[in-house]
Image 1 (spheres, rainbow, N blue to C red):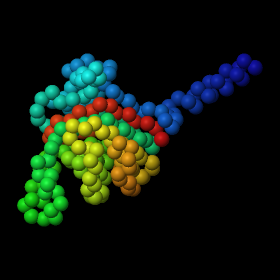
Image 2 (image 1 turned 30 degrees about the vertical axis):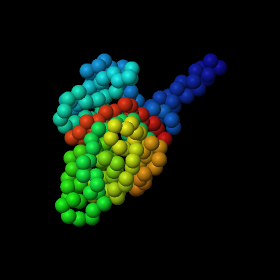
Image 3 (image 1 turned 60 degrees about the vertical axis):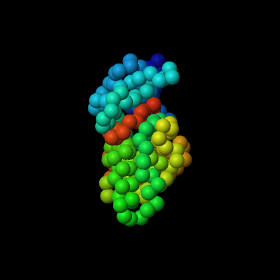
Image 4 (image 1 turned 60 degrees about the horizontal axis):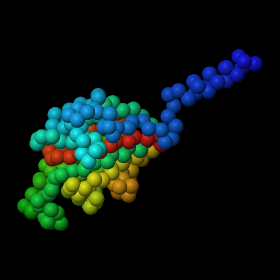
Length: 209
């Protein structure tokens, strides 16, 4: 009898090992375990960024001017998931009043300036490009249309989420859905942040769906 009970318990234990249930966190980082000036373990890049304490909370933030290109440690994103990043940026588009022009030098200046003052968040091959109040998402050769989103304005904390179920990807800003599309080519194993202007990351949470 004892052998049967032990076998059943051992079988249940084996079944639970390595399987992530819905709601389980695949990855979580709020930088609280790192000292000021450090870079999270396994992250690559961040030459001009480090963990700092602001209002008694630790975040990953710039400490010098320059370009920024930082990648998280390797993350297993093979199944369905929702990744949510709490962040803030500081770039301002001084040609914002030209954004409604369809052609001409004003439109060219708007595109050029917004491209150089923006941040790209790459979930592997899936990319979300954020300008001053403008956002676009997708993969190379298959992009969504530009969409104005006031909540990604400079110096305003906002949450950015990518939800993937099979081949369908959905993007949320502050829990409001802004894009949805089918991208069977998406491959992901980390998150990369690239920007020519200052930004900060407050936390990253990735949950199994």
